[in-house]
Length: 385
Image (cartoon, rainbow, N blue to C red; front, side, top):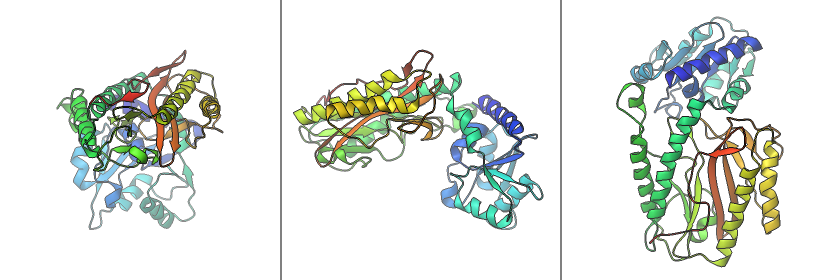
């Protein structure tokens, strides 16, 4: 992983030189993980920014809180790790100023994700110095995944498959939503552990599946992104599992969704779910190199129209070390698909207060079409108990 991160940084420096960019400050956790190979655990939420300063000509600099510096130094390939403290004169502002040098003519930042505390500091400390956006330069690199990255995402796909199987096995009348969430966490964590060792960089990767499980059941199934509660399942209940903030491994994030039904399925719920599956499959069938991102969405939208439904969902989003990358599968995005792009591709319909139909998979674009990263039956799914 660290060798890959180093290669990416060298590639970024080359792009920066070509674009006449001197130095860039990266503050987004996904960008730092992508380039430097590390991430913190008590970061900006606690007022403790970690930063990576990339110079087009010289070695990069990591700036991290002293309390995490020992771990960070072991996690990253970057040799110049500079620390700062919560109290006293050794502030992160001073560490950043030393890395930027005296009187920078311009500072390149991740404009849309830079924390307010860092942006305000730059505005106050460097009045009149232009703040330019480095995001498109790094984003262009992240759009196409390397074979190494795809291999990690496939491991994440296997972990997600174990999570979904556990979700399915947990379903029965009388069982409660939170019990399903616990089953998902245990199964995913146990599967993730099989890909890890307690040596080297691996020892800093936790197998634990975390974040609140997105789970809606019964008439609440139409409420997108509700979390697991103590509600008990009843016969005919639709049950929706979304792993979009849980199916991840080594910082690579997937999209993965399935809808189940307790015991049996009503005619209306069946029709809605079949329409969602058909829309997703139409989108995936349209995906291949040379196709526009918006045309993939159009294929799904045509199914919704034909089946008599409307949807406000985008059909998909690019995935990688961030939950949302570019491009997106939606109207207006004219990005041309290329081999190595990875997407979460969804089918989604809501009938408010009644039911919903949803399905989602992660895929990688190949030379001839797509390959699934996630896998579970794409059909009407009933509980086993």
